[in-house]
Length: 153
Image 1 (cartoon, helix red, strand yellow):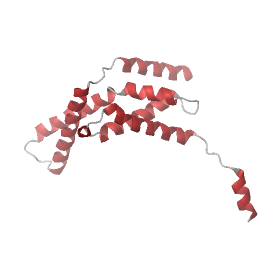
Image 2 (cartoon, rainbow, N blue to C red):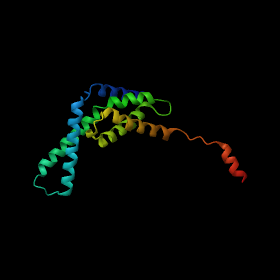
Image 3 (cartoon, rainbow, N blue to C red):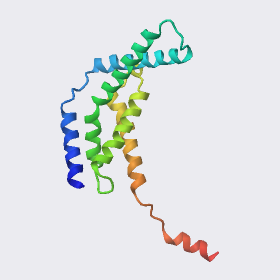
Image 4 (cartoon, one colour):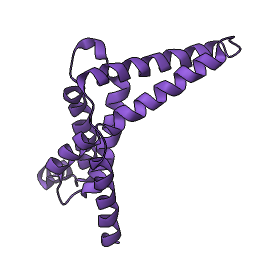
């Protein structure tokens, strides 16, 4: 099982190595497309019989593609953080998975108008997801002294 896990991790690492990183201007363009896609989806939901339905659906699809590109371009950021948090408590592939969930949250909540670099913003969400996973895996240690004192009362 461990060999298969290592092979899967190796394939994943090879895949993300080939992904092109985003430039600063691309981040803003993709964020615009994502936001336009969300607005179009809201319009479709509010008025499903719209005469512009085809156009709105196209904008929604473009927003989804932009979101996916934004996420994929930042997988290496997740990997760099996961390597720092790698411990025996949680295997690296699990940390990467949790970090990717944090990355998705970062992409969904990112506001390009705040003039903050996305990678700086995403680090918070990636670390938060990884720390949460580590906290769920770490056994809780309870001191016996307070429990003994309660028993005496």
